[in-house]
Length: 170
Image 1 (cartoon, rainbow, N blue to C red):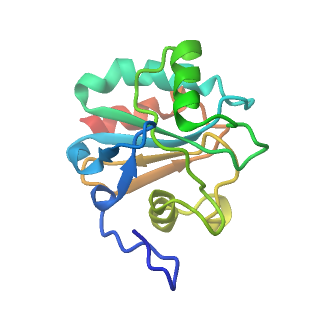
Image 2 (image 1 turned 90 degrees about the vertical axis):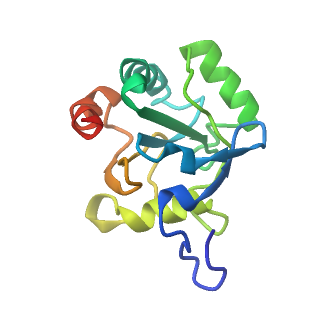
């Protein structure tokens, strides 16, 4: 959901955005109202790929309190997510025991940026006010009301985010 002339998101909330799961079926973000969501651009062949283990550990520790983690495979950084969304999802399940949702393969920068990333980047700029995603495993934290409350660099470990997530989960 973005305006074709401006490239700006027309969504008023995270919950208005449209996405598909790794199999191409609609995934309803509106069902995440009242939950804390971490959105991550993921890749299977990246130096940060071990983040999957930390993300899964966070998910297991807090999913019953309302934490959701959404992984979006992205091949824009060094071609480090070369498989289909389904292949990327199988990789992280097989190698890291990931049980949180892996969604459709997306572009996070450029002319074909997915509407979710148009919206996320509009809501929270990165270091020095830059909007572009710098690398795999950047993490956006969306609160229970659908507002982006934080953006973490690839170098931030999932464990370093836990205290903030616990507070948001209340």
